[in-house]
Image (cartoon, rainbow, N blue to C red; front, top):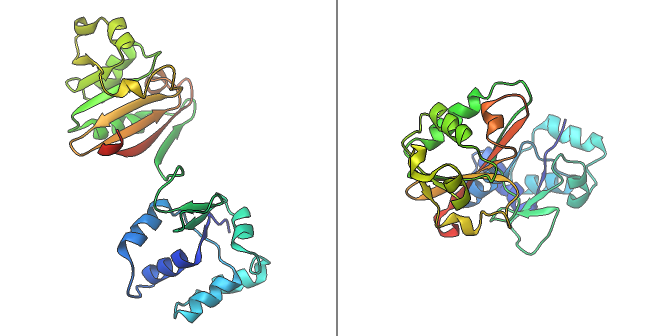
Length: 242
């Protein structure tokens, strides 16, 4: 069995209380934990004893598997080394890797889709169409973005009338108002998304109370065509972080 990660003791207890419907549970703590959790976690003998002392039952087959695996005597740090992601979820803010604080940090759990060469992009188009529905505006950062690719992309997403913001060079390259779509020169995001600071391609989708940052690992032409691989990653950005 492949294990994904390790839970520090306090989070392990909270997770098992939640899983076994044992009250009380800390709702906020569970929400933060599940936002980063990847099944399944591995535990050691000390954690088995901790669960039992707190009246939390462990599946007998799982308990036996741990006892016979040779992993039962390992520390949490050594357990993390044999997991897929090599991390320990924690609530303590002053610990570095392999510990990852559930209250926030650089390591996140985001939605990702990858399409290999020759694989249809229709799922991606359908997803973008849903993301663009009811948004206020969309900002594109891609210094190599071509006007035909943008036009085709927005058309396939049924989003021709949405207000679009571009960097000044792309706006002027596309012919400004003569482009025929609702494109505008960006005055807000370009300070953070520009050639001197940015390598990847980005789409920022703005709604009333939050924004989404979509990271594209290659140009939009590879979303329209399947002759190269294409991956996108979606992150939620809070308003006050923009």
